[in-house]
Amino acid sequence: MGRNFLKTSGATSAIATVPAPPTGRSSGKPNQPTPTTAEILDSLLTLAGPSDPPDPAFNAYRKDLADIALSGRVIASHYAEPLRRTIALSAPLRARPSDDAELLRELIAGEPFEMLDNSVGWAWGYAGSDRRVGYVPSEAVSV
Image 1 (spheres, rainbow, N blue to C red):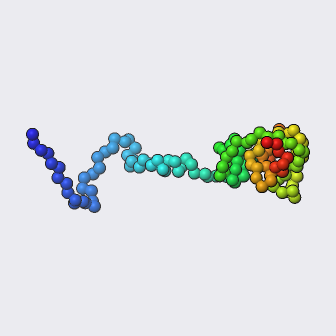
Image 2 (image 1 turned 90 degrees about the horizontal axis):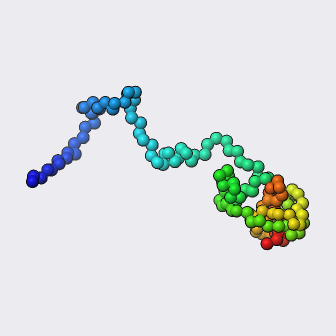
Image 3 (image 1 turned 30 degrees about the vertical axis):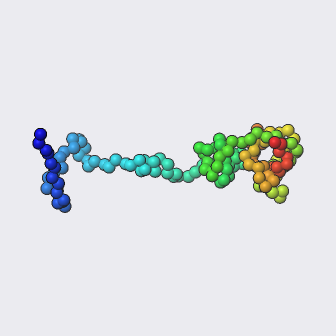
């Protein structure tokens, strides 16, 4: 058995001396490079154009937290499934976690409240059939 050896050369030429073989393409256009996976994902995941976020008065989302039901529509640091709670004591639903904040409506005892956050004395979530979003004092929400 004979051995076959391949010999290589480090010499290169800046000018092509042999014309490129025909590609068999009828258009005669040069081949376009195939996009990389990163380029494809970048084109699919790029946010462009005007955004159309849902009304925050009736859709529970903030920059740090959003209802899991909104995960495909809004961007938030975290998503949570609301905890079904009941209003134990009649209490105001407010726009911000403050006694001085705008009163959105009065919640009555026994009314359901979907809670997403409960910290610093205020529970945040939504109530009623219209899903009005706001803050209620934590002591008004039953566990």
